[in-house]
Image (cartoon, rainbow, N blue to C red; front, side, top):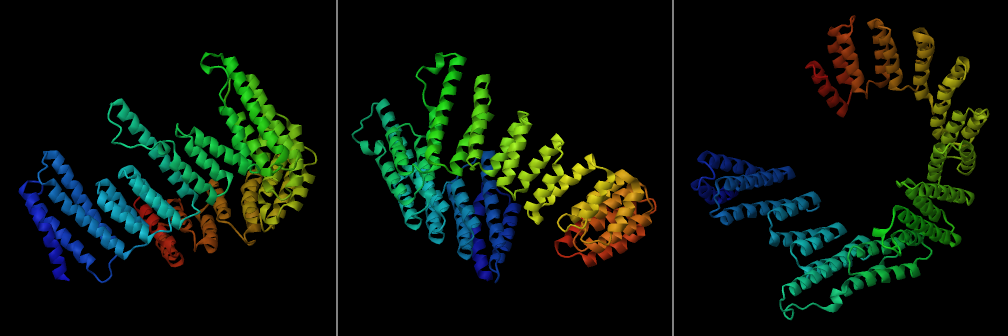
Length: 594
């Protein structure tokens, strides 16, 4: 093992001697480098080598390379730069290759190697890295895309990039992302060739030597990719993604028309097709030039465009009566309603259109549940309370098990102080699943505290502390309410009545401890509550032990000498990461940083 290490260390000596000779390193630094390299090489020769050992060595060599670069810049010395830096770069690549051969599945290691090669512009190395990477990980389309983009953008090789995409599609014939990026690459290639041709013409250079095919310049290859893609991958969403890519290039008018015609003929039953066609009306060019028209005329044009969008949606809904189609229409109306405008007329039109769309979708029984929240918020904003009550009543009849809808209905009824609130609440509990009913109980308790007598509220709390779904939270709320209404004596009475009624929450004991602190109670009382809490939660709550220790240290009647015993008990009870957390915070507490 020593012979191999010695040989590798000796490989460093020639460049180190040169660096010392030209003043980029001192003799002391050279010795330090040799010592460090020897230690790192020995680590790599152990029987069980860790990945971190390779990473440490690679990072050391990269830092060494950066140091040389900065020192050369500082003294302005560039002699034998390629000879010295090339050896170090090659050594780093070798280290990466040795590590990757051991951990071929580690994608992060591969990506680090790629990033390093890109930073130092090692194009030949990058080609080999990508080739090896794709041989090991051919199942990841993102890697094929990365390799193809590098070939096109950095290596400037369209043919190589096209070859990578075609190979990738043999592995992933159904990958939408691959087809999208391949389509984009072909269009970018056309754009590049068109720019080159224009530059040649401006420079009055001979175009006979540079051959530019008219078919390619018109996007023939991109059209081939498009045709192949839509045969493999179906759906309006994919079609639209290709159309959005084509729109970014100003020479694709014919291709865009072809894609749009295919979309309309193949996917007339897809809501996304109609959504796209409707929104296209917003980008339709007005008959008059927008530069020379008044604000009022512009507002009128915008109003007409939005009205035409609405007509397209309504045409779609006459044949495509689905929830997803209504969702897209309502989403459009909501989006336009939220846009800022100075025209009161347009704002009113948008409001009326949105309310109309919501009402029609609701009447058809196809308004999505999430949209009821938007509708109610809008009605509350417009102070149409009666309509909001009516809509929520219908919504709860449709979505009988939805806690959110019932909660919103109860909140509105509470705001309006409706008499039949309790009947609605009882109805909601009969329809919502028991395990989902907690938000409704919390809402009811909060209302009861404000609107009902103390006796009725206490009766409700006593009922809820026995409810398995609500018991933990309600015990805390009951204790807090008792303290607010009846003071310390009532709170302590409630605590005593509940202290044997499991299950508990940590907050229940913390609330009683806070109440005792407000009363500046004796330490003996606080100890009682801390000990009771630790019996329940001491095995999993390191912060509870720390609070107990702080209380013993800071309370007037506290006994700091008890802290050691509490610490010992905590270390005995806590396990795993909780022990580490406790030790760290206890150390900070002792040093006065917590």
